[in-house]
Length: 156
Image 1: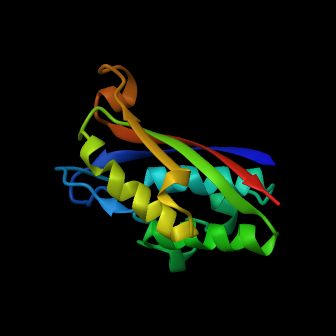
Image 2: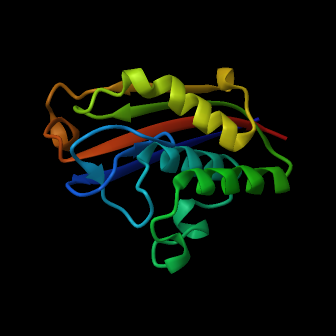
Image 3: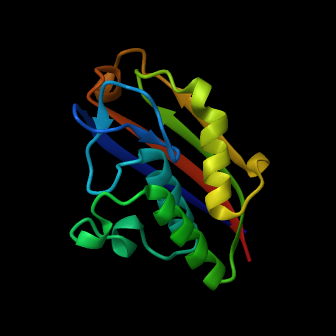
């Protein structure tokens, strides 16, 4: 068994859709990034790649590469799952958390869990997504950005 951790953060800006956990969440702001800037999926990708000692999301999907401009992060997550499978690993479980003052994402968590599970060929019971605020502290609390953290357990 191997454990990996992942972390990602993106700035909130007007004029972009907000993608979290593979679904669009209604909000007046979206996350700025080269791809769709889905911080939750990016954190999970880094946790998976790290657990398998395969580097990080930037190594496999560099933000300077035009083929990843605007890409749906579910595609990146699926590719990370394929990389693990090529190295004889399978995912046991994922535990993750979104840190955002706004919007309230609790109602969307079941859809996020389903989207993540589908990308990796997992049962939804293997995917945990939680959300918290920072009680108005820090960049998340000031609604300047959103971060996400993930921990995964993989096995050969």
